[in-house]
Amino acid sequence: MTTDVLSAAKTALFRTLASMPMPSYLRDATSGLAGDHAWAATGFLTAGIHAGIKRKKKDVMLIYSEFPAVAAGVFTTNVLRAAPVLVSESHLAASLSTRAIICNSGNANACTGEQGERDAEAMAEAAANALGLQKEEVMVSSTGVIGQPLPIDTVLTGISQASLLLSRTHHTDAADAIMTTDTFSKIYAVDLELASGKTIRIGGIAKGSGMICPNMATMLAFITTDASIPKPFLQAALREANEFSFNRITVDGDTSTNDMAIVLANGAADAEEILEGTENFERFKSALLYVLTVLSKLIVQDGEGATKFVELTVAGAKTEQDALQAARTIANSPLVKTAIHGEDANWGRIVAALGRAGISFEPAQVEIFFGGLPILQKNYVVHFSEEEAKKILSQHDINICVHLGSGTAKATVWTCDLSEGYVQINGSYRS
Image (tube, rainbow, N blue to C red):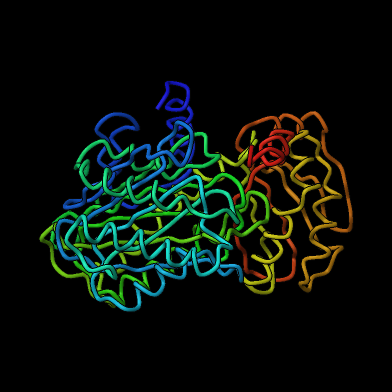
């Protein structure tokens, strides 16, 4: 990782953590973003290598649990579901144990038909053979260009090489190997104190920069924990945490064919089993949500061409679903996002997006605030300082609140601006 990339990653992480209060039973376990950075929990080995799918950058990642583990997962709701998504869902349902995750970047293996599924199965089988596992104990993931055949021979060679380099350290290699247009790797971990006083770790990596409007997870996220927790409870915790983290971010309104988030739990911390309905389960859910939220915000901060990070809250709605639907509509509006990029307090674009959100509210009751500054008041009263609004919008982190005056429900999403950089990146993505 270059000095510039490392600096960007540290800056993004600092900004994210600065705005997130941490429960007393959690401790930041992210010691750094370079060198021997152990984001993975006890008993997990990782590797990330350059196999040759991409010209120079790392492109094959492997995560392996030294101990029996269980898994939970959420997957894309896009109708065009990539081959690795289909295979991983099948393996998750078929096996009580999951010991490894293999991922390649540079090729999505999406819209590749039966050959794509055979290739995804071959990836799982290669990892299983190298690690002495059953094929169903391996989850498979891919990310990159859609519609191109996977260079399976290159990938299989890379899996073999990665299996020989598995290590308890150098976990940044694994994080780097899953990136596509990302400008920095997304890494975070916490230590969680259980009711007994024993400590477990929850740590993970994610990738995502464009094609981000999840309706289940993010582009890719892989989480490890040394907690002992039954598979059904782990799945329940992931679904809940996912709903209030990855499902609350958007960069460009597009949902990927390859989205997935996987959590592996191997019990290596030798702590008490976490059961539903207990204080430990509530703490575990809170800790998992915290980790996923940090990773979510890092993805938005690294949005393709992004120069602004925006926290958008819609309050005063009749229901939470109404608030969320309105917030997503505003956050996905290209006109709103370009106005934010241009530091233009064009509140008309916000109310126009709100008006097509498909929810019930009284337009004359709407209020809009930029960083606490009233921009639009009830009954369409507009009286604010353009200079003060410009000063707020010139900052990197921007808070926008839209109050509907229709109820007590609210929801928050995180998004970014839309710049010329986004067009440049996506106009030449395949070249």
